[in-house]
Every structure is written in structure tokens, then in C-alpha cells.
Length: 157
Image (tube, rainbow, N blue to C red; front, side, top):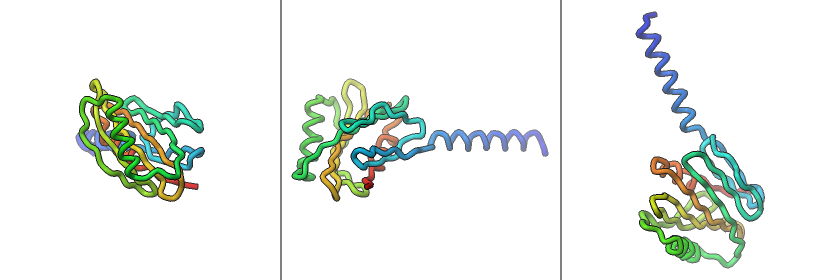
């Protein structure tokens, strides 16, 4: 073997391992409300009680708050998210649209206030009365991961 071949192999192996650690993910579950989601492996739980679930890493902060209301509709969710964005006085609202993932349906807004990026989402479980408000605050280079987290929610018993 030549030195050139060995150094290329070592470089490729290092890049592969670095890529795996960047994209490594874990499943988190909020057992109190029967909801799960996928986050980066380095996420740490900060709060986990009946009223709130928060977790974060250096680039993302996730907060989930339950809304127990059997009469909630998708239209109510849209109104709630738009109203929340207005109350928070977002400087920029880039996207506002319906969301649908596995057992949830809802509405989300992506915006910015004072240079801070956030995704606000209201979701309702199509099989139960569990509804959630989700806020994901993220660094400029982490919007893609914030969207991945938002799209990963699922309900379980």
C-alpha cells in the first residue's frame, strides 16, 4: 500500500464518521401525552412534566405545550398559530401553511423576530383530544433540522 492510498482511506473514513455523527438522531417520547418525535442525538431534555416538554442542543430549542379540547378544529389551529405570530410581533413571516404528519394535522408558521428564527405549530391528534402547541427556535443554519423535527411527530398509546 502506498502512503497516498492510506491517507485517502483515512480521510474518507474520518469524513464518513463525521457525517454519521452530524446526522445521528434519536427518538424522544413525551409519555404523559403519548407523543413522540425525532431529534438530533445531542438533544437534552430540560423539562418533562404534564404541562410542558422542552429539549434542546446548541442550535435548536423545542417546546411543546398540550391543549386539551375535544372541540378544536383545524381552522382553530390555523387561527391560533397566526394569532400567536401576531402577538409575538414577528418581523418576518416566511411560510404559513397546513401541516400533516402520521397521526397529526395542523398548521404552522415560520418566522423571525429580532433576528431569532422560529417555527410555530399547532397540531391535533386525529384519534384523540390531544392537541399540541409546538415552538422550535433555531439558529440560521438549522432551519432544515427544525422542519425535520416538526415533520417527525407521531402519536402512540
